Length: 271
Image 1 (spheres, rainbow, N blue to C red):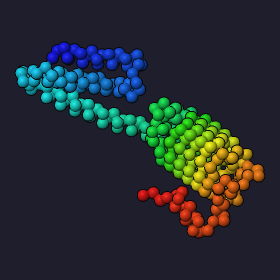
Image 2: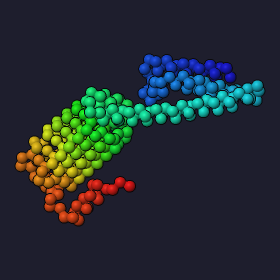
Image 3: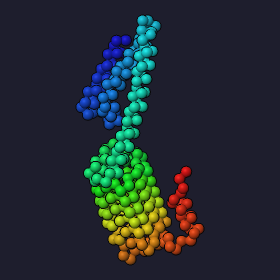
Image 4: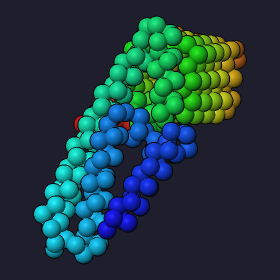
């Protein structure tokens, strides 16, 4: 029994040593990032002792009343600690989203950097996020999942949004001058009144996007999907560019039935 306990303690020591050297995978090392890892360590030691007693066959001796308590306490502590860890992480994420919505560029960029390092930009954390009027000038949002995010009036000048998912995002009046939207997904996005001058739209999908009052002057839209995108006489296009050839639709020429069909396809009502 004692040999088993010694082995478990050696393993725990080795894991702690690897973490201190930064050699553990990120998903494991995060459990050592807060003081609670010591509590978890003692809980695992208690569980290890209970298992060692069971495996040694000594659970029917003087240890019979000890191992169930050690096991129960250990499992209970780990369960409560995990719930607290998840709750803390959710609150931390909410704080990062609030910080990223800041009107201060430096403050918002720091939050974006943290979100990128933690891989929260891609895991759905920012789906539907409220980033209204955020100053994200020069932010690295590559492949970010911003589905349905509220970015109305946001400043995204020079932002890196390559491969980003902005399906149904609200970008009205946003400033995206010089932003990189290479192969970005903007299906059904609201870009009305947005300043899109100098945006790299190569391979981007703007199917069903709303482009009223949007400034697309000087853009190269040859590889951009504009099927079903709505525009009107206030939309600014590159010289000699015919949006209808790319499948865009002039909303001024739509019938009531066509408008309702467009709404149903690209602006479905949320349940």
